[in-house]
Amino acid sequence: MACSSVELQKKCDDLASKWQALVQAPVFDRFVEFAVASASTTEFFAANGLPGLKQSALGIEKLVLAVLDTWSGGPFPADAKLSLDGQMAELGARVLTYIQDHASTLLERREHQGVGLHASVAPPKTIRFVTHHPDHWAPLIGQTGYFNIQAQCCSLEHCLAARQEPSIVLVDAHGFSGSAFADAVHDLRERFSATRILGVSLAADFDAINTALRAGCDYCFSSETAHALVMERIVKLCNTEEEPIYRVLVVEDSKTASALIRRTLTEGGIESQAVTRPQDVLTHLMQFQPDLVLMDMHMPGCTGVEVTRVIRQHAEFLSIPVVYLSGETNVALQVDALRMGGDHFLTKPFNPVVLNAVVKSKIERYRSLRRTMYQDSLTGLLNHTSSKQQVDTAIRSALAQGTALCVAMVDIDYFKKVNDSYGHPAGDQVIRSLAWLLKQRLRKTDAVGRYGGEEFLVVLPGTSLAHARQFLDAIRADFSHISHPHDTGTFTNTFSCGIAQWHVGMVSDRVVKQADDALYDAKRSGRNQIKVCEPDF
Ligand SMILES: Nc1nc2c(ncn2[C@@H]2O[C@H](COP(=O)(O)OP(=O)(O)OP(=O)(O)O)[C@@H](O)[C@H]2O)c(=O)[nH]1
Image (cartoon, rainbow, N blue to C red; front, top):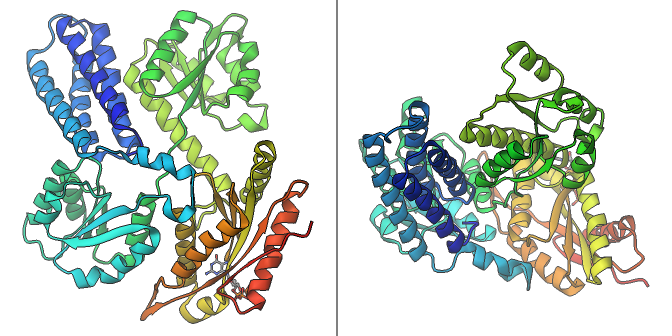
């Protein structure tokens, strides 16, 4: 969970207080506030990795949206009130149980990640295998330890009785009869609020997957899925990073309308800034760096379409989503506005739940598009250009803060032989394994990128040469034990590494070159080892 117990309780209390306000005075404005809060609560649970709580909140949101469609004042529908009362009480009880079970949250523990030695920072994630065939999963369980994940096989009853929620439960459908698998998943979903549930060994048909998802699985795999793909999902789930908060620039000349829009965005957990003069839009875009622009259509001296056209003249804002929000009901004009570089059109008065949903879905798309520009597609790490930029950024901050900085080059040994002996896909899997391992073991402040084919660049701010060596050597030793699957068995592999320490006056190319020279030294000295570049100042 990425939030603290206090934040979780606050979110739940906020929803409850809006519900109470509505019960006391059932007026439409209060209902809209409750509607927005319910959508925001669902998203809050989803964003913080709480799928069980999300499911409960979603039930409330669905009821609310049904009422929003039909009710606009007068006595609040009695059946809806009864259902909402029940679901609010159930959610409150579930949140309370969850908080009591989690005296120290992952966030509280995570805060320690910025300090100390790398190898001891991240608390291990836990995965439980609920299976009738432990031998089948033994090789995969053997791998997890290297990724700082504690795995264990157990019975369903044992798993349900656990005091601490595991990060992941993998439920193996093989060996469950009739509806027992769906019942097991359902019980786990009810019991655990944050655990991700993986259904494996399912029949590869629509009904089997749909039933598993309905019961509460978050991810489904058929019996034909390779273990490597299940492992990839497990590592990804354990590797989640926090998304930076969404940012929206509101271009609107009416201060009242702007305040209303911004309040709705805040309810949805979105940060915003307002521009009342269209002429100031470029300055705000540069300074605030939003993910989306919400644009009024008619402003004094300028239309929203004209402002969008000016924005689109700047290469860096060519793809930023622009959503028009206007009282304009003329469809031809709306279509024209979209043709002129807009992405969506919402009419005023706006439905606040829909506004936040549109804004968020547009931002998600935009961010994932941007990610492809700086991420390597095979590993999800930074690509060559972005990893070099990370070195420059780290040098600037080491200079400003007067702290240490080390840069390392990591290269898989005899990789050509892997491709030649086991095939290119097996080679790709080795590259991915090393990428996951590095990512899993680094601190939030470190950076790792895929520098070339089987070569990685690691940036370790605030780290001495001795610590960098100790940390990377532990990873080297672990990597050499990981068995990689191929068609008829498994094989192991090693890597070599060179480390250089940055000193004041060194440019990024020089420190990277020194790390590369040290890597060459490690290769020449027999591989599967680490060499450091001795300071030459
Ligand atoms: N499977 C796979 N292979 C790749 C990828 N990128 C580069 N390679 C291969 O990686 C191999 C690198 O080989 P070499 O540079 O000779 O190095 P090596 O065999 O690892 O030998 P040493 O580095 O000296 O230990 C080449 O055969 C490339 O084709 C990739 O994305 N996937």
